[in-house]
Length: 277
Image 1 (tube, rainbow, N blue to C red):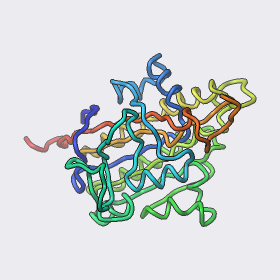
Image 2: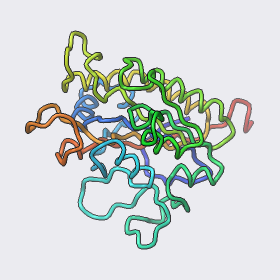
Image 3: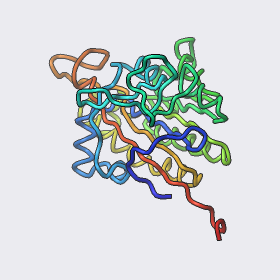
């Protein structure tokens, strides 16, 4: 299976969909690490680099609610930009012939109605299923997972998350899948990815990204093993601040929070050994 950057339409019922949100990842950090070769897996997946986009919201819950309704990060150039996904809604000005339009309130429900298995591998607190608010997003999926091993306090969270994601893809061979992974490692606290660090910083933010990059081949291998046409979407839900203009964190209207990295990769279908001969 050959991955390549593309704008081919997503065809519901024919393609698998894998959405990976790199929670809190800043565009400037992602772009610099890509340019300087510190994220080789992402560089191979995205040979043209990250696309600069604007997120629809400044924190995890709101951003993901928008994503699941079809409002993925928007290209920064002025004008109307056709969306990858849309829920059927009269008067939409960003739906084109290439948009996958679903008769549902959200992408997981729409794809499930078309026979997809929908699975969520949670990460940050809004996916922890420990309270009603922590179940809002996971409850959109037929299968949802969260544990402390997948969360922000475990230094090996991405390893655990992608091992679980790979097992879900393997279990659902022969069925179309929508797999969602909320990568938690870049979110604070991330100081433990930088040896000797005692507090979070831009440097530990980038160190967390390089850790995540080193784990991504596990997911790529699992996608490839399915030999199915697959659209992989990679993006941040928002950025975060480390003291710029006096701000720390996010949920504020700052350009660093609103500007996020975005990338698309299509994996072509490939016949299994012995097929087509």
